[in-house]
Image 1: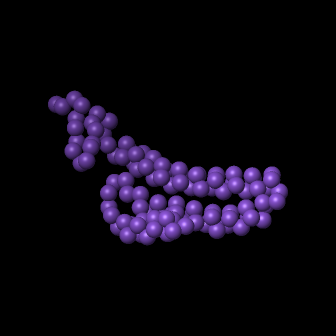
Image 2: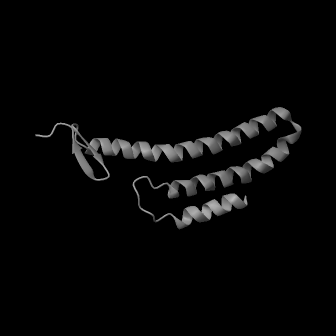
Length: 106
């Protein structure tokens, strides 16, 4: 829990850094969802500890929530950015770091 708290502090401090693939906002949301899953899932695991099938279902549900929140919040913004970038770039060129390179110059 101390590492999760430290990660939240770091994500909060880096929230204003502007780069193309800035992930600090999403990492903060991921950390908050992991914290929520731990706060809700921990007591549920203790309650379901005497029943093996309920324990496994609760553990798998918690792992699923943590993994999906992490994967979706990291990759969905990148896919949206890539889709917007492809829409704005011309078909016969590529644009890397603001430098446009033409495949077939005139």
